Image (cartoon, rainbow, N blue to C red; front, side, top):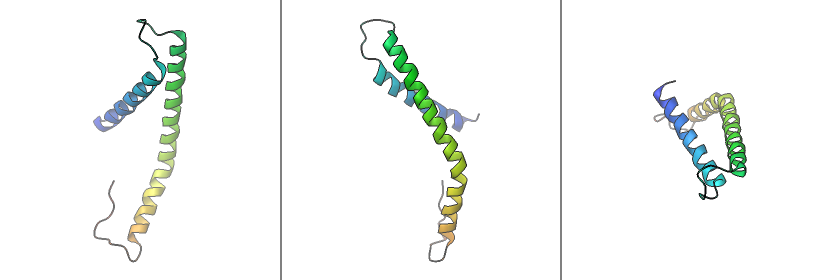
Amino acid sequence: MDIADFRQFLIVYNAITEKCFSSCITHFKYRNTDDDEKQCINLCTMKMINANNRFMHQFTENGPLADKQIQQAFLSPGTNTANPPTQ
């Protein structure tokens, strides 16, 4: 895993952590999480991880096709070929 991949992983991890924490931790009366909070955290993280996996699957399947379509549209007559799209 290179630095860019690791950085992206940390961004996703932090976003999931922040979202699930703000949604599931409802009080700070006790040091430990109660059963409802634990269940909420488990469901939230699984939901976020599954959604991320589905997104990445679709992206890896459709990304190259979308790139090809963008390049074809750019190279079609009547377009400016001096500045091709970049990622």
